[in-house]
Length: 399
Ligand code: PLP
Image 1 (cartoon, protein in one colour):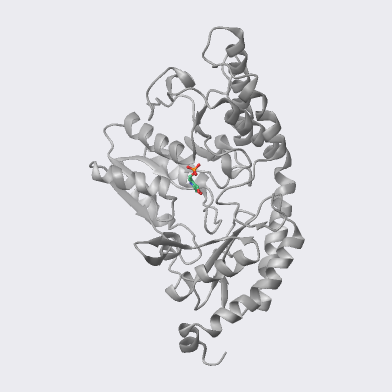
Image 2 (image 1 turned 120 degrees about the vertical axis):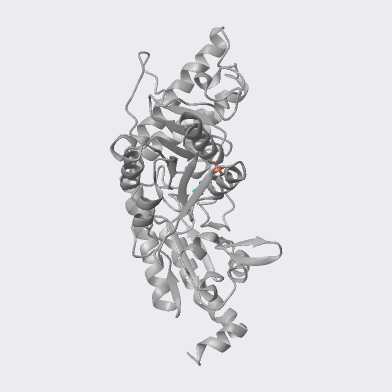
């Protein structure tokens, strides 16, 4: 990697781990057979895919194995988005008399935009809100889930703030009304302990490129016994649940990434949280009028969403970029105007803060020195931008 870069945008995507890259390499030019082939050259690749399936299942605490020892509850997909779409689609098909989806206002567009599409097709979609700390309104959820609800979809950990939802409780509410429960664990997988069986999960989505596997591969956990209708129809791959020749190298990479994540979970959690907490403490000490979004909640260990009052996030990002520091903002540039993200809006973060929100997201490859460097560079950047900000002038009263 470019030595000049300090990469703090790991919720956007991560570097492929060197061990993952090594595990993938033989599958390009040597072991390139089609896993569906009858000959052994291809067939042996199918066996490796089954091994990767078990590695994914182990990360998720999905203990079921069929007679051949295969973790059949895992389906390989192309990405987290496909997994999210496929889960919701399957639940609606499995319970065709039910026409309602209950989800949250802070989901990723992979869920929200698919739900918008489903509402255009006649389904009812109910969005549950969060409070100022990003905590889900559980009473509203209880009221929303009814006998017409096919599926409740709530993310495990939020991609912008890192706030973790009480998925086991949400699953229990869904099940009490006979609905399925799906969780988008794209940001949580590999970062916090997941046990789909203990948590009562029916469907769980994850994505390779968020946990040091490559882009273009994902997985969907589907609890055994659920009648699953595929989103992508074609060949017999993935036990007729996802058509398309397998992305073998990436699947092997995803399996390896899950194995590494599981082996180092506790240690990595500790390290990331320690670095993140120390970084936040330093910012709070050295910069006035900032807020850490979701700070009071249980959060993913490496995610920090910081709102700097009265300045534009994009300006901060540009000045950080000059120093080789990569982060992202809490705004989405839509139709030319910089709208604060739907997550920050749902949390009721005031506009003056939401506009100046930066997400720093860490990985195992970051070091305390890198974070010290960023914490040292930020105060003068913020001071400089506030000096030229008309909003700061209006709001600061000289403070
Ligand atoms: N869900 C969450 C919470 C995400 O953060 C993302 C990606 O940012 C996705 C889904 C989509 O994953 P993918 O990029 O693999 O489609």
